[in-house]
Image (cartoon, rainbow, N blue to C red; front, side, top):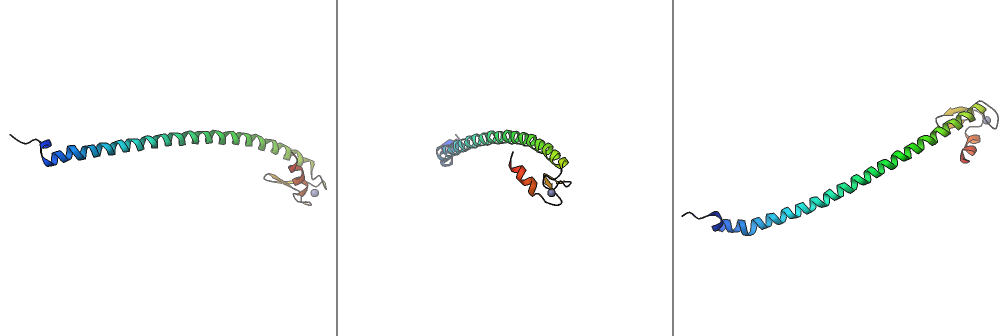
Length: 111
Ligand SMILES: [Zn+2]
């Protein structure tokens, strides 16, 4: 009658030492994966929150920029408040050819 694998020294080591060790390792891996999955979930939630906030900020900023644009358009049309010269627009700043940005900087500080 042939000896079964579990009856051999190798078999006894396999079932007595290797299998419990592998089981323990698998449990550890599963635990780590669970922790990782939770972390990924939390990071995804944080990312979505950040994305929402950013969208909100961008919408707010977009509206404010529109208002500023309108204000600046009116200011530019009225000419320089100091010398009355025709005002140039450089992006978001108004510039008088005689006074520079100075007369507009004061107005910009007061909302
Ligand atoms: Zn001026």
